Length: 443
Ligand SMILES: Cc1cc2nc3c(=O)[nH]c(=O)nc-3n(C[C@H](O)[C@H](O)[C@H](O)COP(=O)(O)O)c2cc1C
Image (cartoon, rainbow, N blue to C red; front, side, top):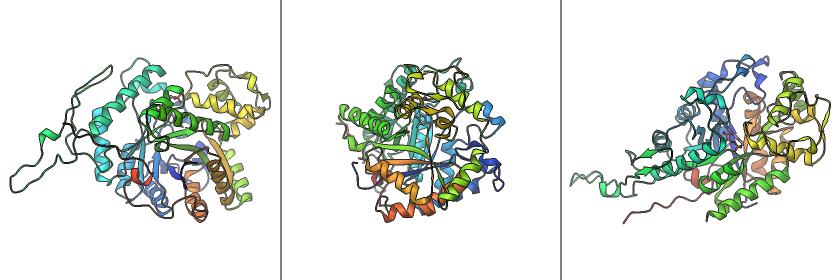
């Protein structure tokens, strides 16, 4: 633990991590495209003084559209609209360093930071879905090494662009008529393996100078990228031991880059299903489980993502640590999934049915089901054991569970002193206790 309180980010992913939640009797299947639906969620989150709202990214439609949403709305556009409907909450969409262009991306986020008065943040991924390549003129998804090399160069370029205006470059002297001082606005003249960017951006540095940078990717190359550039690491952790080891790892990597390890926040993802009490939680869990695809299909997909044949074992067979291949499947969405399964099986064998249930069938994040007190207890316990600096809270059924978490769980966390009562003053960066990058006046 390196701080007296943790931070909380809410995912807007809809209908929820139970992809079949759109089939619940009260659900509107089209809500995931509706602005009023998202404004309601963002305002609920802001009333609970949540640090930021978050949207993942998938720039390709997948075959799963046959049974539920695939991908979702563009996160940058979504949070830009929500910026106008909120005042304090941070805005954290996911962006791809593999498929975006650094100059235009730096400009968009700087604009969002100005217009939201210091609330912009970006979750950097290298894109997990290979189908994206065909949408951007590439014959194949670049391999992990190439993606992370490009990500390093991308972050180098955008951070230098954000910092290229000295603080006093805008003079606006009505008497003399001098507006800007070109001598204090610097080109970056970048020439690298992937990009050639002259710079600078057309407007001065934004309130945070650097919008908050989060990074989601758990391979060694992903953690190294985070250690060098990120303020926040968005991670999946299925056991306390694994989360703590991974948090320690990224803190040590940050220190090796000469950074203060406390300046990088480990934000653990988890999916919550909040009951009004334990019985209600159990009942809703059953109802949502009934919306999942057949367990045989989920088991087969899990086995393939682990690098095993789809028919290696059935739902009621037991899988042991020794059954896993020695190396992760490099074609999988994230190496994190393999590492987490290793961590779970290191604590004991499981049936595949159990393993799948542990992640609501999707396979990336841990599912937590309980009453408001049980959910609060779990978060407190993981945080006290050093597994996280905060949590990226995702929802089993976003329409229901986001409101319940905001209204029923957050007050308990506030009463226990684990989470701030109101928004502290300042920008998102200030509120998360992150250092402000020092602008370097060039001699
Ligand atoms: C917690 C977590 C969240 C992720 N979210 C996304 C996402 O929203 N969109 C996406 O394309 N990839 C996402 N990824 C995968 C990243 O694209 C990642 O950069 C890439 O696939 C390599 O993953 P790895 O370093 O974890 O092996 C996520 C990965 C993790 C661990």
